[in-house]
Length: 219
Image (cartoon, rainbow, N blue to C red; front, side):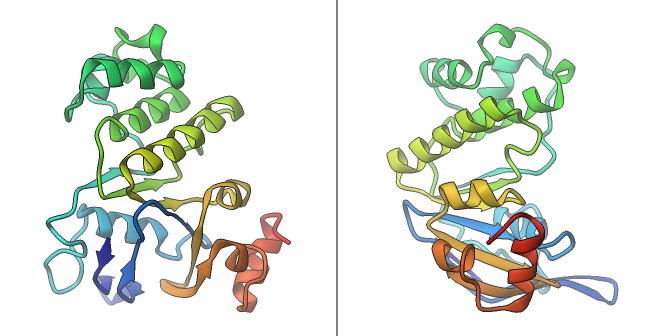
């Protein structure tokens, strides 16, 4: 899916300037960078949650986008009803709840869940139906190891089944290296480096990228 160039300014401060990007079907692109580099802002612009400078939309309106924000939101209903809120059949919901360990919580009020449980529920919600672009902002940050492994497998299976592009915003470099085909590195609100994941996440060209990788356990 092609996303237009965009910028976002608050007052006199421009927090993001990004060129047009093309996310290939069936591929996972990891978006990394320091705090405050514009990663979540870009995810929200791409998802249509934020309006870019000048108005309009960053994404083509004909494409279907599903978005899991960094802070998952539980609606005032049961876990199962939350998962099925935007459509999808009962069998698909059952499969996702089982895979994410939510089967025993299906009737529980969603607002009583822990942070990790809420993240699992929110992931299940965005995986209920196919899309053209799946945007995940730190999807496993609140999950334990077993849940994160299950979540990664579900995302990988989902993009294979529906052929969607995936934009994965993550601080977890191990996760990015396991999952991503391509990678982007944002720095001070700009796209600093992009390319194949094996290059950007292992042999980056920019000093800022290398320092980031070294600090977070990179090579």
